[in-house]
Amino acid sequence: MKRKGKFCLAVMMAVCFTFTIVSTVQAAYSGTDIPAVSEIFANVDLTDAQDISNAPESPDTPVPDKPESPDTPGVPDKPDIPDTPDTPDTPDKPDEPDKPDEPEKPVYKEGWIKKGSNYYWQNSDGSIRTKQGLFTVGKDKYYITKGGSRLSKSFKKIKGQYYYFLGNGKMFMQNKFYTINGSRYYFYADGHIATGRTKIGKVYYYFDAKGKQVKNVKAIKIGKSYYSIDSKGVTAKMSDKKAECIFAAQRFIEKHSTSSQTNAQKFRSSFRYLLGYMRYSPNYFSTSADYKIIDKKDGIYELALYTFNAPNLRGNCHRFASCVAAMASVLGYKNPTVVTTTGDHSFVMIDGKYYDNMYHGLFGASSRPSYKVYKKTVF
Image 1 (cartoon, rainbow, N blue to C red):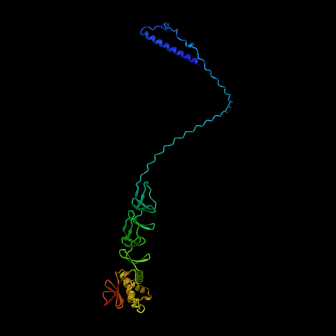
Image 2: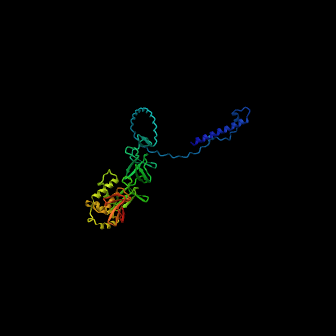
Image 3: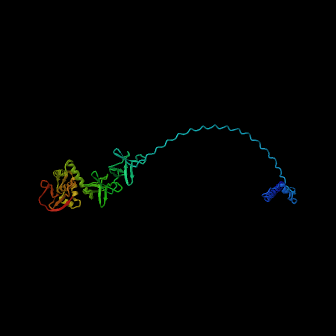
């Protein structure tokens, strides 16, 4: 290999040398006829040129022979794998038909819509709200009925308290009195209606179980106490004895008058019955002892109760006068007053008129015989 390499190198050098000489000669004879190559080389002295081809070769470096590797035992031939049968061509799927474009969903305005005479809440998807109960829209509250309609002009009891929904369906939510169908109610800011004895400002009022304000009641038991209620609905506490006297007078009037009569007629009927059927019993009820009762705080109520509850309406003039004052008060007469004289007698005055069991029974008389006052007691 080295010998061949050196030979190739010598040939290449010779070719380059020759090319250089030719180029020199062409430059020398530029513009004249170029002599033949043989002529050119005839004048060149090549005596000193070395014969590269005959140059002694450098001894080859001995390369030790590689030991022969032992023969690898032959691998047995693998059995021929049978040809895999050709997979049948899958038939082309038919083209799927184009899906029709989905229609655009309509957009609904959320709010109340009217159907017939009722209003319903329409959702943004066009459906109607059907969930029963309170429904809030902004700051307003409404009530959805079982059928989905909006409640209006109606009371509704919710979790033990009453509320009112106006004609537009909104819950009335103001801290104030409000009149509905002639009746007065008191509402709190959250909409619920006051019931029972309720303090509003500095005054106590009374409302029934459904919130209607109660007025003009002579005696009513609230909790464990008794109260009267005036024409403005204001309550005033009263003694148990006075309340019991009023209840007894009410029963007496109902028994001895008719529902078709006016209060004035009821008063006259009850007065005449008491006058005609009361058994005057000075020995049964000591008049001197009655003065001690009259001096007590609830004395006239105690005297009236004795007569209302006594067998056969037993009594005397002091007890008769106390019963008349109680009946007048129940029937709406203002400030009936029992006048007790120093002459062991009592009668009633109402608006300057006299009511007395004496003198054949004075009923609304404008005068009576003179007397001297021991005590006046307003029922």
